[in-house]
Image (cartoon, rainbow, N blue to C red):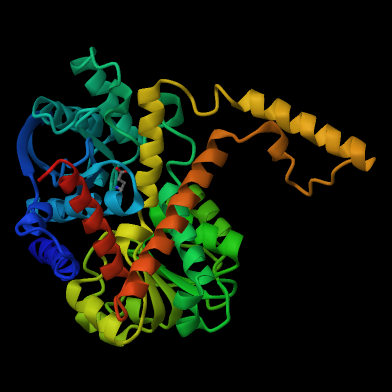
Length: 466
Ligand code: GLU
């Protein structure tokens, strides 16, 4: 399965690279992983020794640090990590953050261990990664992924500060940290928020939207979300609350919730907060998952869980009008071809879910600059805005009716700046992908996104004369 995932990412790469005029041998250099480190380490727990296996792959260092998440899952392997690391290289190049690509995994089921045990295991894993320079504020910077979160990142940052107390940028050795530990406002929601901006931008781009949805907008579109983790839950909340889309089904590993009129996502989140799960939610019908859940009819299908879920068989009977890859690698190469033949557009992973790494970049810059965003200029702008406002009000002889926009007066907060930077990255990138698509009729969004990413990496190689 994971070997197939790597082969699929390489297929996507080759298909785009073949269309580009690259110097002989460069495509292969860009495609392969630079180095993949495997570690097997022991931790004494429950009065015995346990051996854990972990990986960190650096796919590319054409820009440094190499960047990418760290996942805790039982189903992981060196090949899977290499595929995910490659996707990180292409994602960063495409979205315009100056990083190479990396990814890591630890073969563990986090639900089987207590918090204290997880901390011990994480710190040992971090020690191994630090020792081999696969964790370093300047060279390789992890972030949360499946099975990890703020707490995991904080343990890693703390372990790093003990082993590398001389690194003045030590806090920047991981991103996705809690706010009080050097994190940034908006990092947790970032991937879901980025997917929302991508979907909004798709619907506002006439050449993309019209062939599938005619003149209709995002409001009222029916959405099925597979995976109600950090990305899926935030996205479901944003699409329903801000855009008026109807989330008609949530597909989880152990349960499917369905309500054709749209599920009240805020209510569902409150229920999960209270009970710890989705079962027992009164606002939707519930049933166990079935193999063909993803083929249920809807306007927008959002796989936000794991790779390989839309293979050729599922793609043939897919009932959605478009697919948004919030997870990494949900469509196999064969599935992707069938969707293209059926005229079902796919917003590809390397673009759709890039919001996480964009905001990681903001956090990393904040850490290495050692200064909170806005400290120097916020007050200055506030004074200017207030002065201008009072002059306009005097001239008009009436007070401005801000209609909720008065936050303009006080200047942007960190979350305002993070969202604005993220929205800009997502919108400009889609416009660039569409430009590439327009020069090559028949090209999918994925092919165009890969072509753009590969050209940018090739440019970096050319700039150093390779
Ligand atoms: N794990 C996320 C991804 O797959 C975030 C990576 C990062 O922020 O470095 O894009």
